[in-house]
Length: 187
Image 1: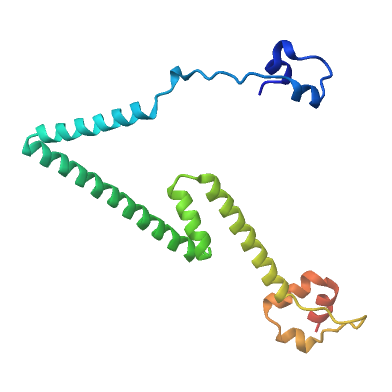
Image 2 (image 1 turned 45 degrees about the horizontal axis):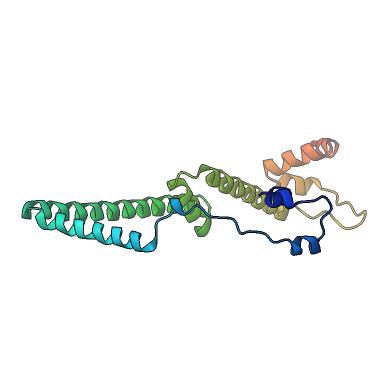
């Protein structure tokens, strides 16, 4: 963008106020119209192009016209096939992602991004999914964790209770309190 000094040229003086600028008689810049085409010329050229296209079709042999029509139909069929293949691939990939735990909306977004080659979006979605899975596992483990007794009441484990425990539970007692474990296994 040009500054005020460049725009005003010789008419610029240091410290000009808004009133000084308003008082100046400034000529509007001249636009070089040599690079533009008038609407009339453009319309005439477009009309001529359409006429030439009609003439070319009229001069085509019946076989050439049939070949042109077939080429257009083939291109439409190929485009439809490509669209259907893309939809099928997205659906298959989405169902695979749902099977491993993605919600349907995210699975479709990831499958579409993968289909379009947007691997940044795929990686970001994978990171969110892994984070959500970690949170779910932690939440599940917190729910499974036994609540300690309130206050200073420590529950003592009796030999009878210890003998009814599974090996895993006995191992947990050993890991948590080796002294208690040694007392309970004495006969």
